[in-house]
Amino acid sequence: MEIKGSVALVTGGGNGIGEAVVKHLAKHGAKVAVVDMVQKNIDRVVKDIKEMGGEAVGIQANVTSEADTARYIKGTIEAFGQLNIAVSCAGIIRDGMMLTLDKETGKVSRKLGLDKWQAVLDTNLTGTFLTMRDAAEAMVNGGWEGLLVPISSVNKIGQVGQINYSSAKVADALMPKIIVGEFLMRGIRNIRCVAIAPGYTATPMLTGMNQEALKAILEDVHLGRLVAPEEIASLIGHCIENQALNATTIEITGGLCYPKGIAK
Amino acid sequence: MQNIFYNDMQFSVKPRGERWDITYSLPNGSSAIAGAGLFAGLPESEAGARALALIKTIFPVGIKTVGPDVTHPNTIGDLKIIGPDVTHPNFIYWNKDSVSCPREL
Ligand SMILES: NC(=O)c1ccc[n+]([C@@H]2O[C@H](COP(=O)([O-])OP(=O)(O)OC[C@H]3O[C@@H](n4cnc5c(N)ncnc54)[C@H](O)[C@@H]3O)[C@@H](O)[C@H]2O)c1
Image 1 (tube, chains in turn green, purple):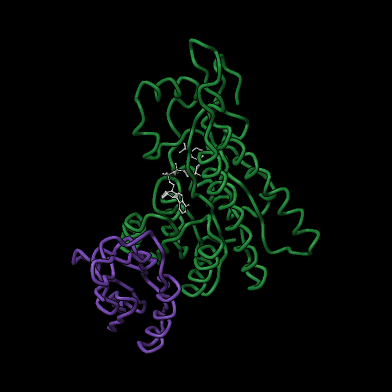
Image 2 (image 1 turned 180 degrees about the vertical axis):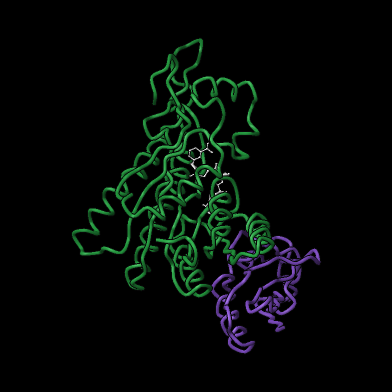
């Protein structure tokens, strides 16, 4: 599929990786729908795309809501007449150990709250499911060529302190296998699905973190720096153009290793 | 150029080359872009109709209960009756009472 002339919807398009993806696709001639929860970020990104001479529509929505999902799919089609690419970048972290022990008694002093579990599952897993499901529905009914892109994470392998996040991201990483398998069974041949699992990426979330902690993270990255959001955007651009990429999850980490050099 | 007043919000549909931009006014007096470079080649009337349909999808009308509205009680003598506090779904920009739906009873 060519990027030029296609229509892409990117959730979480108001910041970080999602912003880089919408800008990359707009720069290469796609029409883009910027979906995010934060209106002022949507306004900024849509303004930037307009200044680049691109075509964009901004839709404020919460990806965890089924009604909102239907609304931004409909809005995208009303603006551009079709939908070809759906990238699910909206995501959050609410880190914490499942159990915290009291240093003196050795007994459990705190448990990871259900609020932290549920918020991450709702946004990172249910939100991705709703976007993929409804985008696929529109692509099937419209008969348009399509690509679904769930965003997973390298921490799908199981990161301590992230039982909520890793559980959601491993499920996101499985989606391409299931979705494409089901498409094959249903005779749906016009839509592919490729998930992307980034490593530590230079979004405001990470660049603003404690610089000592960041330095420690980078010691385990073969590339010696954070992945740039634009590098993820360009990989998604390649996935759009390369039809043979399908039913898989691609990691882009810069060579993230466990301490002592075993690649994750 | 077309102006559309919808859901207490002011939108403008402006031509840019053969395409159309939809802007809207923010409460602070500045404007934001709802859509850029849309409806290529359509005449003004059709672009206006398409823009209105799109605006209605992007900014739905409705109300949202956010809690008891303690600042606007209905009073019967000394008795204060506090109803639910409702707001538009575009509540992010809602910093004053609606002109078309004032809260004062
Ligand atoms: N930054 C990293 O190092 C990294 C690494 C691996 C995976 N990821 C994943 O990539 C994706 C993007 O991450 P990022 O670093 O760009 O994050 P970010 O915080 O910079 O951007 C996420 C965007 O999603 C939006 N969002 C959050 N919840 C939403 C909701 N319910 N509805 C609509 N929008 C919502 C936010 O407003 C924000 O604009 C996430 O899924 C994240 O888990 C990030």
